[in-house]
Image 1 (spheres, rainbow, N blue to C red):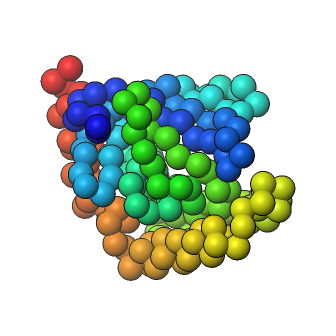
Image 2 (cartoon, rainbow, N blue to C red):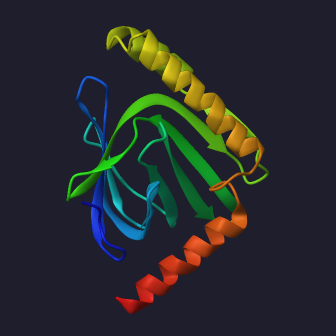
Length: 177
């Protein structure tokens, strides 16, 4: 079962031990393929584990992959498109929410395609505390390398025309509602 284009869904992220990590109050589904669900979050509430709430400030096109161990959030800002990539389990949809397990490592990509890897200390801490295991760590570290190669090669979704096409879809869907 997959969501339909135009449907609003929740997005929920957990940690390896099953504990709540973060949730988005609404995400508009703009595409569903065999590989991913693409959504847009725009001025939606995000709730953190510590109960802190914040409102997103701009449209973000999000790609939740079924087989890749990461997801990609492209934030459309006046200063350009920024990508925030979470190393995470493949996503699943349970009829209500898109869900995944967050594995701490993140990659922030700037409009000029320079990037930085974030939260390496958090990854080391949680991998010990939650006992990720050698096989899981090998998968996560390989996926991080694969993700960085995709950024460097500007492969989809790291392609501005691709993101602009999805942004156009979002505006068209928004006008229909």
